[in-house]
Image (tube, rainbow, N blue to C red; front, side, top):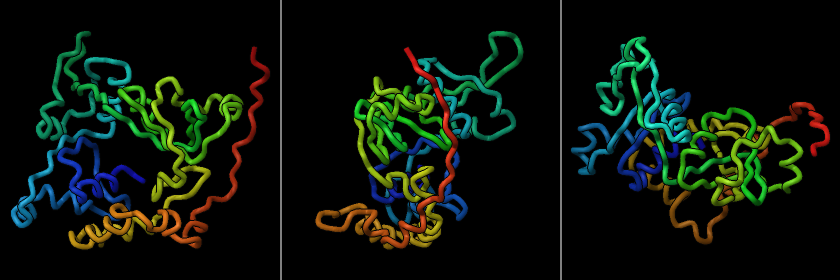
Length: 259
């Protein structure tokens, strides 16, 4: 699942008091309405809920924070905040003088999560985790964290990992737990396992606009799951089949014999 919808559902469920983020939105559809209800003054006055604390960066700013955290740097400098309003909205984005005399830059603090959870295509029992497709900054987020949990579509033998070492972006030595959770990225995609479920994003928009409908959805899909069908079973076989990707092999690489 894309982080944006996870954020919206966590806020709706009442389990988040602060959101540290870059751009937010329901991709291709519009806003995230559970979050809007916790941030807009009129909605807060109507509901009586406490406001959601927000700490906003650009996408590059968040990548820079993870990179600094992974490298144990005190901050990360970047130029992309000039002529934007983000430094006014977030006092942690600070203008500093370059130590090399080439003018001012902005600095963002390192991000060192207590726990990073990464969903990937496969890992072995030791946590050596392989990913293909859009990598984002999953490696940096893992190295920055105190603890790392990888959720994977498939648990494979160590020999499979060793046969294609360049796909290993998270080494087992930093992984604390491996969870086998097929369809763990739905409604987003896991390349080679299933495609993006655009219907889900469209369906979520009217649900999230109404607080009562959102609560009912959470009860059906998140809370009180004892004795109910599993998540993928509830999607139904036709929908699952429609998301299965076609074959697009990348070709083979002969790495030769090592050692």
